[in-house]
Length: 121
Image 1: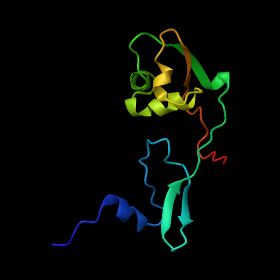
Image 2: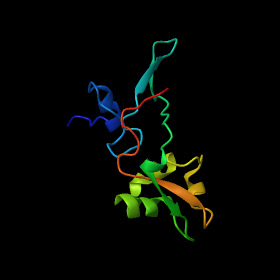
Image 3: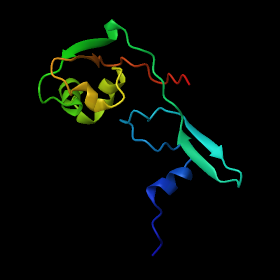
């Protein structure tokens, strides 16, 4: 029986294949290729910089005790894995900062708030 090739290796053989699932924040990010001195190719995700959202593209949320970004994503987007949209809309380095302090006001992006395909690098 033939060996099964790992998923990551198979992606490299498919032109245009993307290593991130469709619901990932990096799905639309451009994949770069760095060629090392010995000719080895190293794939990497290029920086993903987003424009700030204005008030018409967000709604405010006052953080309550015990809330988490994934629970807020479930509440506002219907999918806990979309927590990164809330993180992207707020100036935090660590997503835990979003909800670590009850009473903090955070921005929740409205549907379609971030323009897709905007790859300013």
